[in-house]
Every structure is written in structure tokens, then in C-alpha cells.
Length: 461
Image (cartoon, rainbow, N blue to C red):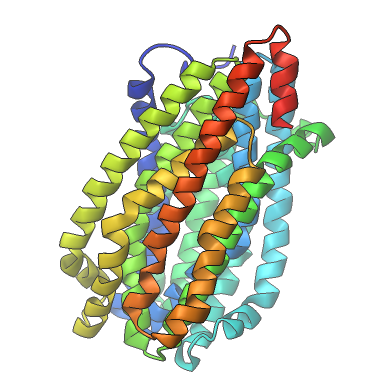
């Protein structure tokens, strides 16, 4: 037996909310790592240091999202195997996922440390920021194994609805991060290097705790370090589902790199600082909405594995309702309190005004992004990962890049840059919705036939 939440019966709306609340809090705590970095350097090191740390965000997301996407594959495959009651497969998937996280973390460390400055130069990072940004980025990537290990470990626990323990681990690590940042910056005067070191030490704490948790479990998620190996078929299945998610995340990050480059094109440190602070605030709203994407993909995977298509439809509907409510309440609250929130990061009036411009376009329409993500979660939970990747790449990523290279270049204002976000969300969500309706209709026909299990497997391959 596997301990965890029953995701296939009872009040699914209530269970989705119970599942997502710890995920929301966990995501917020993860964001606090970067937020504390920004607040400490912004307050005690100045706007140049703030801009330096902020200018690395799009790049780090670009590089690590490819591997983080495979953790989505781990979550989906483990949840589906649990729904199918395939104990041997769950065991193999757990050990494959943990070993893959260690390997991918090592690869990212080598890649990030040796190419950091080159990427920052490509992004047209300002001369006064590039040295500090390079230092921060190299130290950050030095601890990437801890980042990968935690995310894969949390994905494994989430597959059975165990979301409270990852929250606890992040809470402890987050407190350590705050203390370490102040110590390294205020006492040792290490500037951006100090906050980077604080971040990777706190990530080491959270990743160690999640591994110990898996080792101590007595159910199917039990981790035996001596049995770590890459099981070929399990890794292939994880990658087939997770890699498109990772590619999509990376391509989204590429579009954000273009946005960051466009922001840098104004050659104004205050604009970069304001954009950095606003983006970090928006990250908390996004993390809260994204928890419903994670809930949707996990609940859908388990119910699909058990052949309960009607439950999959309910999960999609409930998740959309929840994410819209969350996006509207938090997005509008962030915007109307924006002036006070931005002051936490920077005391410069001009930087605050630039941050408010961004928030007026992003925060007030962010619920559209939430709808888009939940629809993707439904599609991936049903075994379709390539379709939403292609749609997202064309509808959001490619659109933004084309917009920046054409309309924005000829109408060079911040407003004309940021408006590309809500337009891309509307386009992409609409196509995802149509795709989901078509897939549900196909699956309904398959599940009405005698050979349900075989044909369900066939349609998802």
C-alpha cells in the first residue's frame, strides 16, 4: 500500500484545494529564496546589485527548466502507475528519478559555471551589472545538484498527494536562507556572492531532508540508495512526458530572455531594477496559480491510470475555477498594493514607477496565464505532452519573440513590450481548450470499447 491522498473518489474539489494549499506555500517559499536575495542586495548593496541578480532570472530558468520538466514526467508516470496499481513500476520510477536528478544537476553545474558570462553578454547585460551577475550566476549553478534533487524528490511525494512534507522542508530551509543572506552580506560584505551562497546552502538543506524522507518511507516510495539505477523503459516514459514540458518551459524562458534583453535595450539601470522587482512580486501570484496546474496534472494522471475519464473532466473544471479565482484575487491585490510592495525591494521612486507599469499589464491579466497552464496540466495528465508543447511554443513563445522583433522595435516603449504577455496567453489558452475537447472525445470513444486498457495506452503513445 502507498500512503497518501485518495485522488479517485470523494469530493474532488475539496481534495484539489487541500492538495494545492501546501504546494502554493511551498512554491512561495521557494520564491522567497530569490526574493530575499533581491531584497537584501536592493536594500544593502544598491540598485546595481539588484539589477545584477535580477538580470540572471530569465537565464537560470531557461537552462534548468529543461531538466525540471522531466520531474513533471516523474510525477505523471508515478501517479499513473499508482492508479494502475503497478507496484514494481512505481519502485523503478522512484529510483530512476532520483539518480537522473543527480546526473542532471551535475551537468547543469558544469554548463552553468563555464558559460555564465557568455550568456549574459548575449543578453546585452549592462556593463555596470555584468561582473556581479556573472559571480552570482556561477555560484548559483555550483549548487544545482541540490536544486534538482529537491524538485524531483518533491515531485515523487506529490504523486501520492503528500504535499505537506515538502512544505515543511522548504520552511526550514527558507529560514536558514534568510539568516545566511544577512550574515554573508551584512557581516562578511560579500554582496551578490553572499546571497548566492546562502541560497545554495539552503537548497542543500531542503534536498537532504526530502531524500531522508524518501529513505524512511515504508511504502512504494521507499528509496534505497543502493538500488539507484536508470531503468531504461521508466526513464524513456518519464522523458517522453517530461521532456516536452521541459522544452516548453525552456522556450518560455527563451521568450523571457528576449523580454529581458528588450528591457536591457533601454540602457537604464532603474528600468531593469523596476522590472526585476515587479517580476519577482508577480512570481508569487504565478506560483499560487501554478499549484493548480500541479494538482490538475497529478489528479488527472491517477484517474486516467484508473480509467476514470469522468473524474478527469471534473478535475479540469474544478482546477480552472480555482485558478481563475486565485489569479484575480492575488493579481489585483498585488497591483493595487504594488507601490508598497515595490518599496520592499527598492527605495528609488523612478524604479518603482517602472515596476508599476509592468504590473499593470501582467498582474491584472494573470488569471489568463493560469487558465492556460491548467489546460496544459489536463493534457499532460491524459498522456499528451507534445501537443501542448507545440501549441505553447507557437502561441506564446514564438509570438512574443516576433512581437519584440517587429512591433516593439518600431514602437519602443515598455507598454508595448508588456502587452505581448496577455495577448499570447489568450491565443495559447484558446488552442489548448480546443485540443482538450478533441482529446476527451477520442478517449470517450476508446473507453466505450471492450479493450479499454490496450487502446487507452495506444492513444497516448
